[in-house]
Length: 586
Image (cartoon, rainbow, N blue to C red; front, side, top):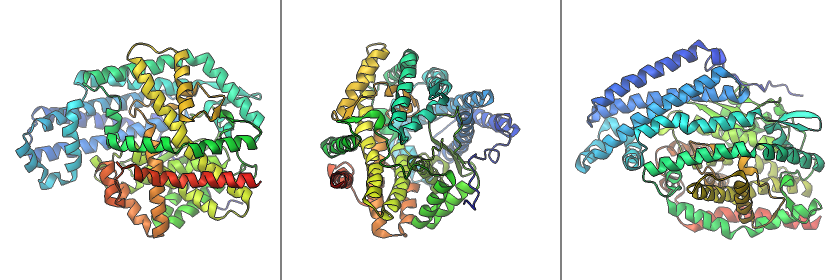
């Protein structure tokens, strides 16, 4: 019996009371607009003096968190109700304000780039600029690849709007499965159903939807990618990875080292897929059986049980993390209900002005659902750790965001592994761990290959849906080394990461975060409960240095070397070997 109240519906009124009709939200939008107008006037008289520069940066910081607060609120409202017209209005206004903010940032970057080296050096040692040194250096370098003001002004309706169209279209799709009308998110959750016939039927129902709508989705992806390529062309950016690498503060050498190691270690994971397929009575792993549970005992889990488990394990890791989980669950930071029509995508939205986050998901009552929930709470804890950090240094790259979310998953998986009493339980948990390894080393590699190839072909013109299917099939064959049967060629449609306009190539950051989290978790096991403070120090630094410098500072490791990535990969290989051995003994 649940003696503790774990709310399944989040509390948004504590941020802006009244939803999309909130007078507070309306006033917030107007105040933000006024502050941007004031800063635009100030920029016309801008001179690179330390005091004036410090004033501009302070105002930028305030506007940045203000826009983020408004945008996150609109996203949360639309996750619950994609047809909320008020929320659509505020999301559009937030994007327009963001575009103006970005234009001011571009102007400032050009000012910084024009400063002579001698003057630049004296600026950086100014006391009132000490909190901005990293971001100022980064902006000075970025000036060369900034889009023009004209392009920036077009992005809200000519670029980011395509991502919004995708989200709205996906949310509008209803799927019939065994007489029930379900959202895409609910049908995707059926991938973990204990009954293989349900998994197959839900897969086929989704396939029918993708075939019916593939032309429309192809248009969205083509227009989005085409805009991005034209924008890059205007910025003299030839390599489509240049911007994503810069956004993630990763050197090309680091990405190449990670990809090289990933390709060398695929065989053990292909073996795992083959063994699991044989246990299901198949010669090869069928795509719609990949998420199948190893047994039925772990399927039924109430939301309050999941919340209590996460709270307990977070507290075992550290006091700060435990208190954070208690606050999140008791004060309504999580939206977990499972009604029709909800968005298909789990998200974490940060509210930097109030130092809170909100987590949105459709909790399906499975262990996979627990891991999805804890993944998003990992993002929220990262936001929590950043509360004392200067607002301009709160923006951490996606690769490090995925480190925190994956680390949170590992806390739950490790705790569950420690409590296993039978080989069957151990197989179940090894399977859950290996699913994540396969996703990070095979599936995400497939996405990386697909996205690169789509960008290359889009340079030559429109890429029709049939060709996108071929590119997806080829990428998945390469990514999975042929270990997957009935390849889901339409996964380019239901993978939302391809439509994230603010984060192109949102694939390799997951793998980066996964492998880095393995290193951090290994350190945590060596250090014990005292590691929490070191972990939070790393998270707080994540917005003010490169990935290479961050890992060197806190782990003493060089991530441009393959040896770093091999250490993490070898831990995952051990899981595969143990799974294969246990499966064989059965």
